[in-house]
Length: 442
Ligand SMILES: Cc1cc2nc3c(=O)[nH]c(=O)nc-3n(C[C@H](O)[C@H](O)[C@H](O)COP(=O)(O)OP(=O)(O)OC[C@H]3O[C@@H](n4cnc5c(N)ncnc54)[C@H](O)[C@@H]3O)c2cc1C
Image (spheres, rainbow, N blue to C red):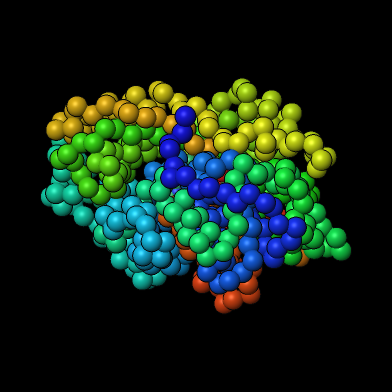
């Protein structure tokens, strides 16, 4: 079972019409609903399971600038500004705290790459620094094998994934958004080259705009509109410990270890590098755009062939909209964690922090990351389908930029001046040969 989220109780009666339908109640869909509702926009959000049931409650909870692709600099800067005011905005505790992040470097090449990133970030107004052993030691309280140098970003933060999106959703409801949980979108209907309605399992809603923020399901939703984005899934494994006094308070990453102090006093732990890639028919279809990232990262990806291949293959065909969709058959995508990664991570954490050797795991879970080949999201209208906006492919780092991304989508829907330049997030880069290489700078 996945992490327990703050409950959000959905509305009962589906409206016959609204201005905008959002598909997906993860942080991206919820943040969009929140900013639209605050502007008095008539918005409905459909979530097939519960709010933040998938990636948005299963992530590590880092809200980081450090090591980010420069194409996301503006968006993360705006997002952190929004995070800092989030508790006040939603009238609740999202767990956000400015705690700093530290990326350890154990070899000269990594240290040099981090130093180059610090320089690039400084030009964009993001302040970070390289720190050496004494400072690293002071930041990583009790670490008996600290890295000799590291990239430290004091203004980075963390929030509690099981609290943040649900509280934003409750705030959106208070501002007038209608949220429907256990209510899957089955399909999107168009006429004359623009959106006219959506069909959900509870009925049809006429609308002018649809925002598809379906996380790992977005590829399938768009395929029914003959839009083929090269999105794949990556399975990540996470665990958490009981409350443990006396360890480091910041978020830190050191290749084989990703650690975050939780508000409950425990730690969220993960292997910093190893993830599992379930092979599916799309893995072969999209092999080409992923070659650059595979060349960079192949050592850390474990390929798995099994259930996912056959279930995706079986669910690929379009389903008539008056019949149950594959989305209804999987209310919450709850992949099994890889226990080998979980065990080795706990053992390493105990070795590195002898004062926390009594750490034990109180929960483990898996999460399915929605990946794009250049590891930058799509936040974009779609040529030829008026009223359609896609917000997906956050490639394992969409929690931190969720507030900014939601604001940007709301700007696109309402025609407001965009909070940041959206050019890097255009969907067309996958179709017109302008997709940049993945950022290999760090
Ligand atoms: C293990 C792990 C660690 C991570 N760590 C971090 C981190 O530390 N920092 C960070 O910034 N990011 C992190 N991420 C990434 C981050 O969690 C995601 O990028 C972000 O949550 C994506 O939000 P989303 O709203 O796009 O997708 P999701 O949260 O996956 O939400 C999509 C929603 O759409 C719904 N949906 C899909 N299809 C339909 C349909 N047909 N009808 C109705 N609803 C539908 C789904 O049920 C789901 O709830 C991590 C991710 C994982 C898995």
